[in-house]
Amino acid sequence: MSNLFWLNDEQMARLKPYFPKSHGKPRVDDRRVLSGIIFINRNGLRWSDAPREYGPPKTLYNRWKRWSEKGVFARIMEGLAAEHSDHKAIMIDATYLKAHRTASSLRPEKGGRGRLIGRTKGGMNTKLHAVTDASGRPIRFFMTAGQVSDYTGARALLSSLPAADWMIADRGYDADWFRDALKDKGIRPCIPGRTSRDKPVRYDKRRYKRRNRIEIMFGRLKDWRRVATRYDRCPKVFLSAIALAAAVIFWL
Image (cartoon, rainbow, N blue to C red):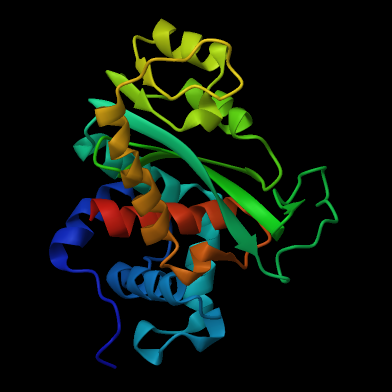
């Protein structure tokens, strides 16, 4: 099939340092298996529908599940981002991801762990919070249920923010505690004030126009069907799909 995806030699060389060490029996061809995993995630296919060129579907699924639980795909995205991101200005925002019926069971898992899926006006959703660099390339992700406030994501991502000159965000992040926390980290906020404020907030309007880059980033991530629609019940596995998509689209 001519439309299959294959990682090239340069891409494999950049990914290899993040692969876990093989113990015991050597792994099968990393290029073939990872290319198949990317193809499945990009097209939103069932694992049983994987083209035969990628090998047995069970091999693809087992590698995907095992490496997702180990956080390998998240480390790949964060590692590649750390090498090449531009932190002169960073941006933060959130978007909704529709949950498919196969993932949207609200019954909690054993041990009290939730699915991170909530009911909103648009149905059952997961909310993805993201921080990008100045070019709109993702460097941090955090996932919550769909009804959770943007402030919760901002608070969770605050401690892991890289050193930067500016933080660009929409007025949904206009909170005194968030502005003060950014200033404590040496980051100047470029955030318009809410209309309910007594005094208007000054901000760099020309710099704020660049915020569309994070919206473009979300749009490109949602081109991957397994990201735009959540099929995976396990939040960690779904976050791995997002991290893998980000790594391939923006960092490879």
